[in-house]
Length: 248
Image (cartoon, rainbow, N blue to C red; front, side):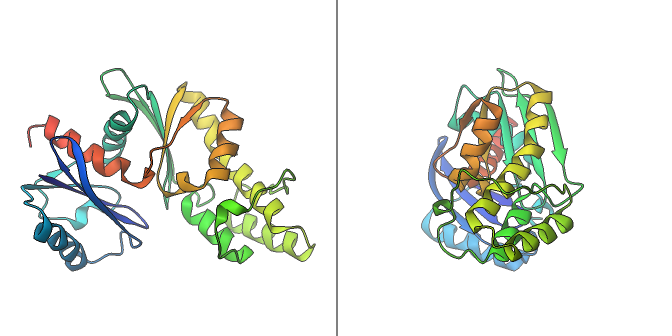
């Protein structure tokens, strides 16, 4: 059995695999700020249940796992993981806490190109989280949907937040503002996808659980968007498979 650990910017994911099958997984809502001791505690929980042979590390905070038997870059891991869940995939959209990535893979699951957007928080999961906080939405985010899209014109996260506050002051409904936020996020992703020319796209990461945003993205792209049952473990699974390919 192999344990994959993906320390992202805002969440830590662990997956146990045996014979290329997912046995168990866990997601913790703390990312790169997590202490190595806390990671070890999570690993011990798995080791108490399963006979773990090797540990593979990936993600933004993979350096936190100094004891890993193998380290796999997240872009490569995402490509491998996307193929595991959907054989027809030729690309990946991963909206993380601190950045957004669009990756192109070939028939041999090699990463042949990718675009990383990490210069501004707008378009990231952290930006969406902050917007939801400003809107004071505490229940199921997928309940908020509207055909009216509030205009969020700023491409800067700080100014976009100011616009949201201004829209609230004008009594614009929360769902209209949220649709505007989704539109703004998707407008950052669409050019990246078009530049790489991908069509069967796996949407990974926690943001992929937002069904309304995923629908907006699909309509804007007019391409096949594929979402795994648990989109947050794609990178983790891919890291394990890539490590095995490299002779772990």
